[in-house]
Length: 146
Image (cartoon, rainbow, N blue to C red; front, top):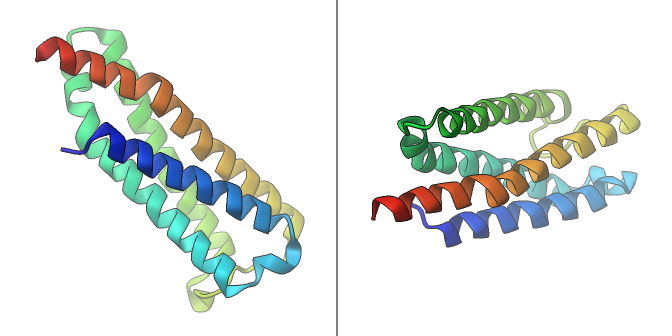
């Protein structure tokens, strides 16, 4: 079982990488660097791992809870997980083609920056919702059972 400290640590790492990447992406010349690309791939792996960890460890108690609102919250988070995974997959397909796996493909910089900002914002919003809504609820329910 994953601990809340581990989840918070993952969220912190994802937030930090989001902020660094967004800062780098705002400077066009940084986007084509290997370092920036490496950070981006580390970021997407961390996001995917975190979502999988949350999906695997936190929803079972919520989905089987007698309160329909709690069940719905879990379903909403699960749906959000799938949406984030789809957005990341589309983003990678568009901006990180396999034939150029060590670089980002940025022919349309303004579009790239906008999509990047939107993706980071969505993921940061998800982290905030986890921290403010999901974790406290799971912790509360766990304490009631204990």
